[in-house]
Length: 356
Image (tube, rainbow, N blue to C red; front, side, top):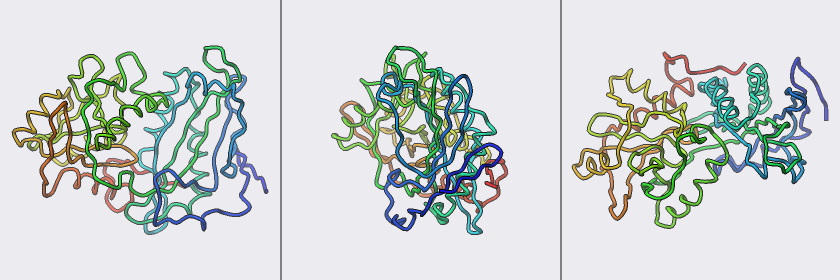
């Protein structure tokens, strides 16, 4: 393998790409990975040895603290290729800020901004053929940090590994989505790590999600931990409710992730004259709206799915189906955002980032 070095990152090139082994017309979300990955180690108080190398397995001790105490955070981003072959990111600085915010909450050292963006852009140039143009195609980008100190004492690690891996993807939810409103389990609580993209948050949600799947539901609609009175998030997404012509969504808090797609939807909708209310949303309010026929739409919002319409929900012993709405907010906003992401529409908000 040939190794070259730019002013920050060592690059070890592949001998042969695996791209011809991948069927891009039948991708399962997150199952295929590109040729390269980035890694950088924190030791002796600083980040060092930033390297892009061929995607492959790691050698890590079973005593590494990530396995025992769960010090791990991650981000989700996407890269898009327009019809001219240019590569674009969507609000990447928000992801950079959030991974460091998550890291701080888990006592993980923050990662340098210059290095983050140089690693990201260098990888995307190396893996550019994996980014396919066209509607529905994108490259999912997964930056993450794990604790690597070999020690099983219950304390924060003094060694970490920051990595970026990438996966070519299409739709996140391929079928219909229905949710069950949580009335027993909780995703997070005040004072916890609900606002962070911490690995443990997602691990804790898998069992309730499994129970929901047995009932025929694709996700759990999470409620507050105190009384299960207020609606907060839908599975791995922020959630919006359209009651008559008003969009409702819960405010961010210690329990709710500050989603990049969420705040983009709010800003875009308000710009288009759609009434948006960011406030606590009661379970009873949504149930009553559904009974009266005033609940016209529900949808989840996140990087992976962008916007995923929710067709129905269950609460205790009641089940509700949402009406089919022509010219839905979900479809209008999703198309508008994806057009911005793919350089098919004006970006008046300055959200697009061109990869150089």
